[in-house]
Image 1 (cartoon, rainbow, N blue to C red):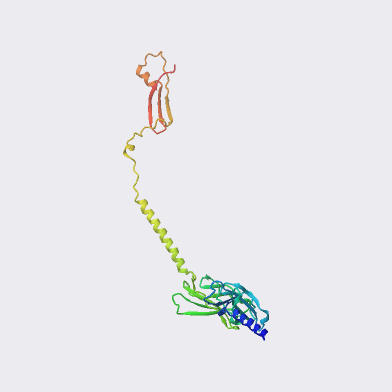
Image 2 (image 1 turned 90 degrees about the horizontal axis):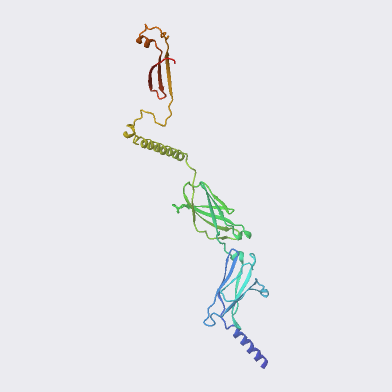
Length: 321
């Protein structure tokens, strides 16, 4: 009887110690794609800042093989990423601990392929080719465990009420037959029909199409170039016509240029005319001095300079000595 009393007291003391801490509440698994984070809340007026938490997991209905995910953590969350299989069903539990005291376990059932949420694409690149937009969507990690499709909403930025929708099988999508020189906005989400899962849409991204250059624009550019060149040519002609003509100063015109410069070399050519008459004998006294001068030898020298002027050196007469 006494032994039973002591055993009862031991169980009572153990129960009072184990239940002296409140249990975590609002336990939930935040699962997006392959990221699993267990979160909970805990509130107590005592032991604030000194309480820790332990979180375990096991396959559903297999309570004897729990594995620790977090031990003695001071945070109100525990990361289960890379610990759980996508197609398994698990029992998750968490409790509070402080010194030699601990709370009761709080349990949660978690099945990833049912409870996980799809996240939107992390990045969407857009390339503009004339009247077409090519989208390159970042591939989700969930594509390794399920078949994903891509849903697009697109619209003209100035007409947001007129939205169009397209669905693509792969992350490389093309929006064709768009209006040239128009700005379009795009949003993308991923979904899977088998698991009935759909992600949120990405934030709107906008780009402008270019379209084909019209032929008349090229001819207009050529015409404008010709007009500009013609205007420049006309301006140049008028400018040169209005320039004052250069006149030689009167001071220079009055200089005596009739005579060649002193340093200029000149050539002179002379023509010699020789007239010879028979010399009468000195013994004939009958000839007068006047007749003698008429029949005497006559020489005339005419010289001409290279500049065209001509000078007469005169007529010379003389006898051969």
